Amino acid sequence: MDAWVVSRHADCQAVLRDNLRFARDSARIGNPTPAEFSSIQTEDPPSQLVLRRQVLKALHAQDIGSICNAAAVSMRERIESRRGGQAFDFIAEIAAPIAMQLIVETLGVPGFEPGLYMQYSTDLTRGMDSGVDPSRIEAARSAGRRVRGDVATWFSAAPEGGMMLHLSENEVVKAEAAGKSETYIANTLGGVFNAGFSTTVAATGSALQLLHERPDERARLREVDDLVSASHELLRFMSPAQATARYAVVETEIAGQKILPGQTIVTLLASANRDETVFDEPEALIFDRNPNPHLAFAWGPHVCLGAQLAVGWMTEFIPLLIDMADSLEVVSAPHYLDSATLRTIHSIEVAVH
Image (cartoon, one colour):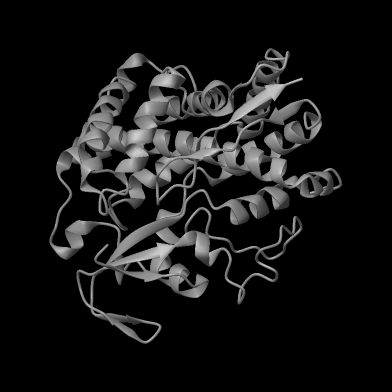
């Protein structure tokens, strides 16, 4: 990968937190992002703070609990409708449509047909590994163009609710669009949409498989009072987001190793989440783990915008899995997407009895 790799929690956290020494924005090492791809995800503070704060305010204005509960009701109905014992793909027929519902209702946008967007999401996810496999770049760019094309129409569609309503009426957002570009706004929202969809699918599939493999843990979850704490522990343990990268802005040092300006540092989030110097019994699921400073949502100025939504969804999905444990059967081994960045099940067959 032509990069330094850090795997300890303290080192990963330090790199992600210190945006003065370690950049997400490649322009800070002399390699600016083309305007057609710019967003708050490609920028660092202070330039990304203005729009990021408005996006967070719009998200926090939503009734996340009700949105997640409605999605769980829809999922239960979809699963119940498949009773009869015939095998089907849980990801394509359950996880993807429910992830789409969650993100569409949160953002207040038209969204996409779930099957079509699964292909876009797959190409975009695989594209995150283009540093090791350049053949993935073109499919990812094509998917990105298609998503950005739809996202660009959302502001003109007179949104009636969700985050888009707040953002479309926000004078700060309008000023950002005027000062930077509408493409910058559209790319940001497209990034939020894709991250929300892909990580929801990943966490949903992984939780299904994990609790299928470990019925004893599923039984223990029945006795858990604090589902928020349990959700954080599952996310620490599963770590859907496996890694993220930064660039050294200045000559620095990590764990005694000199790092030169312009060099890449890959932080292994999943490894950090199993660091025995931070987490007692890191290979065990401890549903009341406290403290639990996991890096499943990364850390620092680029910490995941949708953390609240992710935890909200898991607190609804866990009881559903427990309730349906006797009727929802996993009938095949999962097929994982060939992605180093996102640990996600691409397909897994289930049957409902």
